[in-house]
Image (cartoon, rainbow, N blue to C red; front, side, top):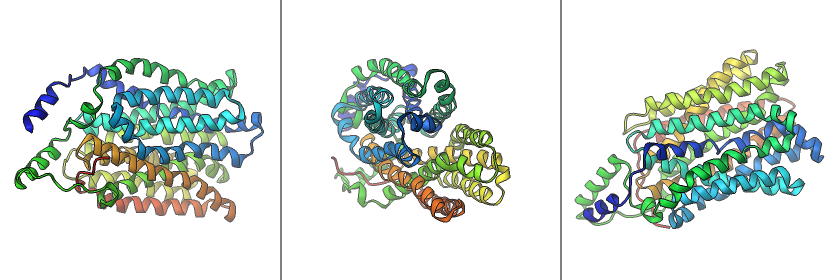
Length: 421
């Protein structure tokens, strides 16, 4: 058994550092198609005669697509291989962006749906590939991955209006099809040389998990361990809860922070700058938090450190909104670090690439479904109460729940191997 696995591994040609780094180029395409929309909503609404309620739903469609597609991604990944599936998602992303930009009113919705489906595939598979390619430095690699995502997201938001002012909102949105095509072209040789089933299921990535599995096998006389469905494992639900809670706080603030600050007397320009600061500081949070995740048997300290800043931010916004730039900095650190912790927990709590992909699909499916509800619920509460206090109080409660979930999921609670799909 071990000899066949060893021979299988020897047949896998280890990629060069440049090829390994391509995964971070894929990561930069996972947010610009989303974050470039918000600043352009007034222009889109004016051009297509859409009211604010309809425009708000435009931002929710991709999140709903995340929830629908994420649990299904492991099927094509298992059949065609992760690299080839990622290549298809990049091409699909570029197509969706173009349709959304130039397809008229109907194309706006069709394109947004395609964009959401394409990004959902990347959201699920890229962390799995990072785990496989960087087994010894998974947390640091996740930090770099998160930084790539956040830098691209904040850059897209900052460039959207200036580009639209010179070339129109359609080109401003369509521009982000260009990096998707370029990265797809660079990724193509890697996808062509990959072996689907081999690269997806045959490589053991986590040494501690491998040792544990080997010891368990020896103890049981090489009898295969019982396989348990993912949805029956409490650890999987804790990881899912952490992913969903941190996603909800991020998308609620990304959607409503400027509006809240304007109602508190902050100028629109400063409110927009605070949102930019909130997103860009997340880069630093994502790069720094891996230092607290070096202990292989516990991520509790990292989960607590990532969760507390959001509680402080919400309390600060409610009690001293005039210090909004301070709360944007603290919240940005918490948001960026929480994202890395959530992705790292998916890797730390699964044994094989297949299980990682399935857990990633589950966590992101339910997580983004919850996140899609968050901004809508916050807006509804603000409309019904005439103020943002209730909405942000609810957000603070969710941040406290995230802290509790982080404490529970932080200790090493590796899942049992799941049943093959």
